[in-house]
Length: 248
Length: 342
Image (tube, rainbow over all chains, first blue to last red; front, side):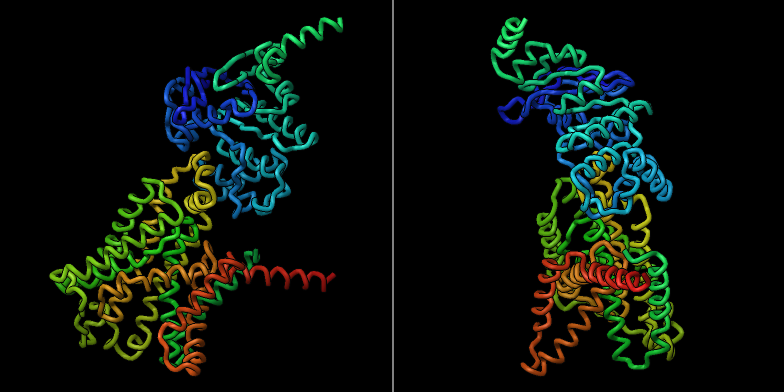
């Protein structure tokens, strides 16, 4: 469904994303992980049209969408959320979600109805008339998800929707995301909460210093020496192996 | 929020009162006062579409008022066209200027104070142009339209001074009221439409709006055109009522400031805000003239200093304006009522 090939994004002399390639098949949940500053959000922004890549290609359902405007990409069925949440603070929860619903629905009443349904799906049914500016962090993350979902996407890009949530809230969001996948939406997510990555994803990519250094099932990734080194520092994989050997 | 039913009743009473005002109020001075209030409310409503709903603060809405006023005056004066024909050109001209300024600003992503400065600069540029193109605009001495004295031609000439007792008294009042009702209808539509929702989304966060499939550039372009169209109605009214326009009236900062005062003091992004703001400004202005004038003698501009202070206080402590204040009071009252019922 989504095909990213050797995408590069530079900021002046800094190469934030260097020839990254990845693909997401219909119905999958794919995770993109990596240490802080690895370039995950930059890669997301380049895929979704918020940054113009310096090289490489992005196709959605076989159509080239490289460097297209974000709103155009959204209309084609791919929508992103923001790591730093961006609620429409002056509007209510219902109105916020309705903005997403209006992407495909012109009629105000129908859009508001869809907004209420989507709010129910992400567990915000009782906060519909609350001002978005008054929501807690967890509430804002859900709202971000709800708005994106209301655009009725084929592919959802989630940028750290679990950051800053407590354990119970993470469990709830994991359940919601599984529900979204079951409804037929494909998902690519950036996540730091490994428990959720392990539980949710079919496959994962690891990004480090702007390059994809590993790909595979969550279990494979967790044992990949390159990945362990990326997270824990040079030589960590060998030391762990040695330590593991000593235990045995 | 004040509930929908109360709001509807409030609107019905307000509109009925405005329609009936000429029958109930015999004092010409009072009617003039109300008419001026409605005029500023219309300017404010035009500004509110772009500034209040769209978050794009213009400091040069006189551009649209003045362009419409000049077109309305010039086509009648130079070509002798009917005012009922020229008004369409006046609206179209204001919209064209809006589209031009909007394209330049939004295409290059100018936001906030940069957009404000660009609109201010354009208004000043037009001000200078109107002054210097003497052969077209008559320069600084302006354009004076001739007064129609034939009662038969009153409607055709869009002039009510000799239109018989009732229209002579209330004709212009109903014109400005009609224009303001159009302004209410447009902003009311913004509250209940896809375009309005998208415009408010752009105001709140442009990136988030783009991510949700909104073409922010196009939304802002449509908003500035709509805003210019509503503001242009004030220019048409002005020329028909006073039969005169000059560069200072048309493009001076006065109209731009009046427009944003009314909207900000009344309540940004609300239907009733500009009217409340305008009423407030005029009442305070009269009051200031009476009291301060009595103390210091006639000092033109004293009321403007007062408005400046009020504007700063409102922006600092009441960002939602008088409408916000009314909602807070309403909430307290209904909470008290519920407590009393319990």
